[in-house]
Image (cartoon, rainbow, N blue to C red; front, top):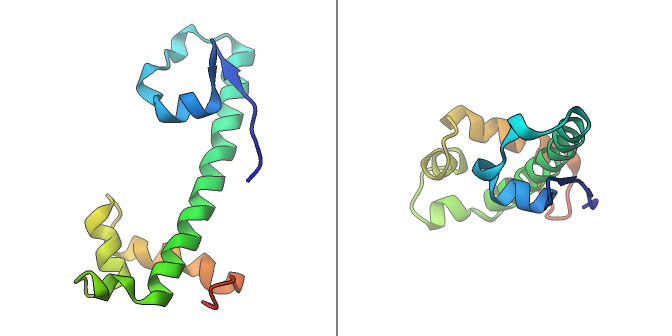
Length: 104
């Protein structure tokens, strides 16, 4: 994972991600707002890629059924605000990636 180094009013990107409600965006100058938005967007993409890999691994292991769910999509919709169809969409990129878990 790449290290995104962004600082906004004394908060680094990790702090922004962990404390999003404490960021007073209206106080940011244009360059700070651009840097924070760019850095945050990159981090969101990295986190989403990790999430896709993790869901693919959960699915390949059969973890959802082991914890009582009918499918990975059903489990995912129960633990996140995603729609049941969203679980399948999350798995799709992992299927084509040929990841190390052997899934895909």
